Image (cartoon, rainbow, N blue to C red; front, side, top):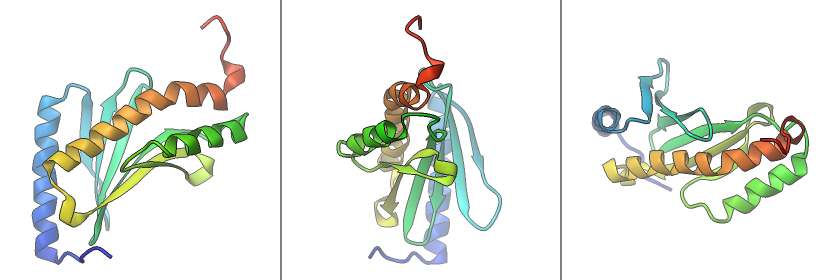
Length: 155
C-alpha cells in the first residue's frame, strides 16, 4: 500500500502540480485549457486539441495516496461491441501506466494511477503525453469498429 500523505505534503504537491500545468500550457500548443474543479476533490482538467479526435480532456485527481488520471475515449459502441471490447483488451496488453476501461453508460475510458511518492514533473509530463498519444492512435480504429455503419468506403 502506498503511503498516506498529510495535509502539508498534499498542499506542496498540489502547488507543484499547479506550477507544472501552468508551465506546460505555456509550452505546448495542443493545450487549449487547464482548469481546476471545484468541490471536495483536488482535480484538474487538461483539454488538448487533437488531430484524430477533436479534443482530449485528461482529468487528474490528487488523492491522499495516489494521483489518478483518466480521459474519455468514446461513447458506448452502437454495434460490434464484442469486437470493440476485444480490441481495447488487446491494446491493454501493450500499455504501460494506463488501461482502457468501461465506464458510465458503457463509454470507453483510458485510466491509470500513480503513487504520490512518484509524482514529479517528468511523470506528469509522461502521463499527459501518454494518454494523449494513446487516444490519438486508438480513436480512429475504435470509432470505426463501434460505429461502423456511419463510415463508408468513400472516406
